[in-house]
Image (tube, rainbow, N blue to C red; front, top):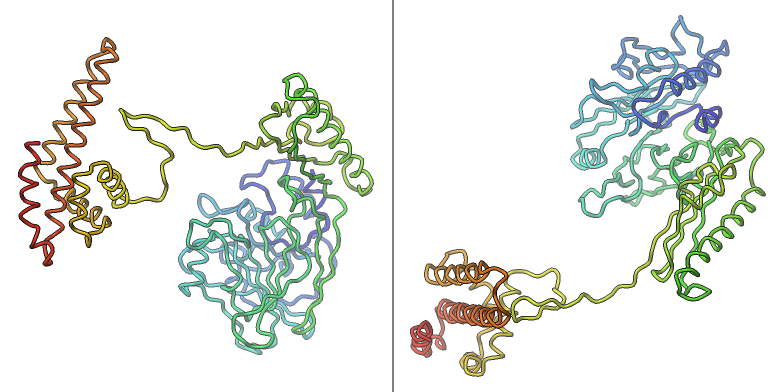
Length: 512
């Protein structure tokens, strides 16, 4: 109902006529009645259609513009592209195709291929003013962005009097960056749009930016840019601060290559009341559960009543009496949870959305992670963004510092750095040394046998098995250390001098 009331002031569409691809019969009936009431009449249309309708409306079996059809009296022509809500499905059909085939609207900017785009303009003329209307229906932002970058999109321009045409581009894409993980950002940057356009009508974005915004091109040429008008949605489809702004439509007056815009505020959209409430203090009556339960609803109710009182001052005569309200409440964990649905029942008949008028978010302070034990080793907070080489380096560095004898052996080679341990260990693991793999498999079998003893194992037996497991792990790690040293020192005078001592250690270590 809200959308059909606001539609009375709209004559040009940039997509999303319907909120879903399969609208209900009631919605289709209301839209058809509006088009027939305001668009079909005997008023003459002064626009001359100069382009080839078979090219602009190749998706239709009636290749002509609706106001030049001798079987229909169209006094107000409507040109529209499809959006992401009424997008193409199945056999490439949209709910707008039904309106186009019935002669109520002119659907353009529809493409069957998704890899290459050839955009042919709708050429209109009135007096001495020529307008070239380009349209691109809703596409995946990544796909359209790549098409612009790889030059797989072509804009056909009229050959006659190329510089006398006022070029308009109608889009239905994300304007602001939505994703930081994708290379394209899931949006269409303004820098990719060709600068021969004079005006860009940007659909899809719900925020109303009705004043023309000038975008300068990266090329250092005076006046080489275009204007962007973002009309926004005619009704509120989500409860956010951007939707709470007044809704507008704009009337363009084009003379030659110059234009002027005159915005008109819509009087029928439902009022939206939006605010935030932060309970960043302790409960006024202490921290007991009884006080917390009573205080939060009282504070929230006071804020809601204040919002409703202020909303009545600015409510228009043609706006619905029940506003949409959204209050975001942020509170620390010292407060009890608020019963939002139970709280909303008190405002039935005062707001249009009583059950979801309150959105709560609990603020929890960041706390350190608890340490946990595995065997006899205590592990704290695990560092992020680490690699296999860094893990191996840290393990050997901590292990060597605990053993005085092996630490002295390490000091003998002052030029050898710990960063070499990780790369050597990675080389060794990829080649699967059979002796170390055998020792590691024996260790895993020993742990499996100890774990299958059942719950009857005593605490002393568990501590003994943990010590044996730790000793076995140390044995394997020490063998890996000596083995990696022998592989790492393959060249250099220092390695030649101490090769015999390392080999001796390698020979005696398995016996130890």
